[in-house]
Length: 176
Image (cartoon, rainbow, N blue to C red; front, side, top):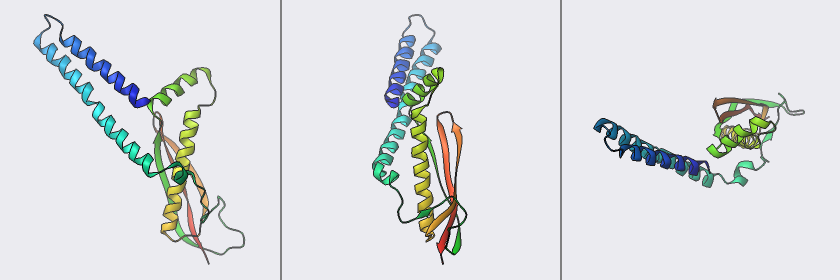
């Protein structure tokens, strides 16, 4: 949806600048400027197509079941010990992701701020980002041969408007 709106906006810019270049009696430098702006707007679609292609690959690689599955082999706790277990500390593990919503959802979130209430698009975005960060942290711990991750924490920061970084981190441990 957001990509389609972006393409429509770019098409409108291309048409507008091309029409401005056809104005009779316009100085040659102004015609060249308008045609160059039309070409630039048309070329802006190419990086967006590349980003869309990467997103499709990402979605194909990580199906929803894979991202949101519960980890059953790794014990995950947010306390700094496991009752009844002697632990060998392996080190810090982390998972991070920078997530954004598309233009359409970002625009609707902006409209929602006018009337107040939960912005479900951002809630979904952050929930998905936490799941991805947690999965990456668990993958990091599995790479160390850990049985559990203790003292798990989350952090979040805004990278830019409409995009947030989420990090999950903890201490990887092995049972003695």
